[in-house]
Image (cartoon, helix red, strand yellow):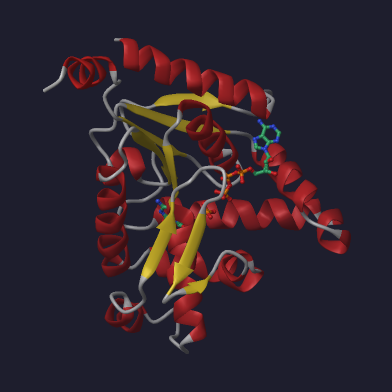
Amino acid sequence: MSDTVETAARTAPAAVIVGIDGPSGTGKSSTSKAVAAKLGLRYLDTGAQYRAITWWMLSNGIDVNDAAAVADAAGKPEIISGTDPSAPTITVDGADAAGPIRTQEVTSAVSAVSAVPEVRTRLTELQRSIAAEAPAGIVVEGRDIGTTVLPDADLKIFLTASAEARAARRSGELKGKEASDLAATQAALVKRDAADSGRKTSPLAKAGDAVEVDTTELTLEQVIECVVTLVEERRSA
Ligand SMILES: Nc1ncnc2c1ncn2[C@@H]1O[C@H](COP(=O)(O)OP(=O)(O)OP(=O)(O)O)[C@@H](O)[C@H]1O
Ligand SMILES: Nc1ccn([C@H]2C[C@H](O)[C@@H](COP(=O)(O)O)O2)c(=O)n1
């Protein structure tokens, strides 16, 4: 090994794996993307993968409430996630799925599909292989990253926020009539969280060694700064 290569190998920081979990609307995606971009890490939105498989089920006439039918089809779609935090992508069988996975139809069906163990096994394997291939490390966000997907992550964060704050944030993203119905937005969030927390297989849960950050009274910038500091502390420890 030449001196230059040897020095680079000695000084390059080891890959860092960060898992960020929490209920809907707590700021996981916004925080994870920004932290990954600031620290030169890859970024993986596992919720987008659950939405992608749900979209495929709906598009292919599978009854999403028929767990056996969903389980049979779970291995069929090819899901590819692009992990550049400044331009994350998701395709299903080669088609761009970024738009279709955010429809109300998919949002309403995703908890049922993601409760099926065969779906979780398939996506957990995919998520682990993506994390293992990230050269400098990765920020992976979801519901079961710290508990199931990456239990040996270098840093686990669990974001929380009041249901009121989360509904107000989501309402800010919606337009027209949808935006005015804050109570309906809040009810839908709470219902999805209950389904995600109540399922048998790897439910939404805080890992025992996760750092909990309540974002209710924090700006997004404050949350990002807090997580960046925690990652840097772990790296230098
Ligand atoms: N601390 C914060 N203060 C105010 N707004 C925030 C904060 N964090 C995130 N937001 C806003 O809240 C909305 C939801 O954030 P984001 O999509 O990152 O949440 P999430 O936890 O990934 O949600 P989901 O699980 O539903 O995908 C976005 O519009 C985002 O800009
Ligand atoms: N690791 C994960 C990530 C997501 N899900 C499910 C549960 C969510 O309601 C849904 C959509 O996620 P979002 O886009 O809101 O982050 O996907 C899961 O079960 N496990």
